[in-house]
Length: 169
Image (tube, helix red, strand yellow):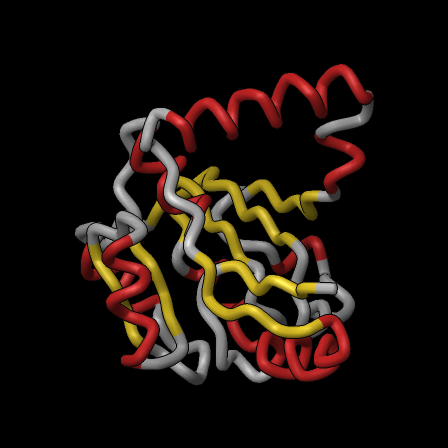
């Protein structure tokens, strides 16, 4: 949800994909221009319809292997696929010769993009500035006692959560 807000703040159009109707409003309130409800990973046709058949410039996918193929199919020529932090596992082996449309594929690892403490402080200061200015809203989805950390993880893995999950010691 933070990513949608950042893309909107920078002038982008956001097509959000959620796994249930219950999550659609959260995506809209985070700034999604269009919301596709899809629990099975079959959404590319709707993305292509929304983009006049062209596809999107960038896909950010942290949902796991079920969405991988349609995320690829949603991209325009020379589009960028950013795979990040999937709690549901990776896509498995990838045949690079099968990648469509000259796309760029990357796996975003935090330490590669923020490799120094100075850069971490700079980027963190920017995020907190946006929060203080009201440009970013941090949505708290649920609060758990630390003893229920396993339940918080299960809720996240089971797609029963939206927003940030907090553990309280």
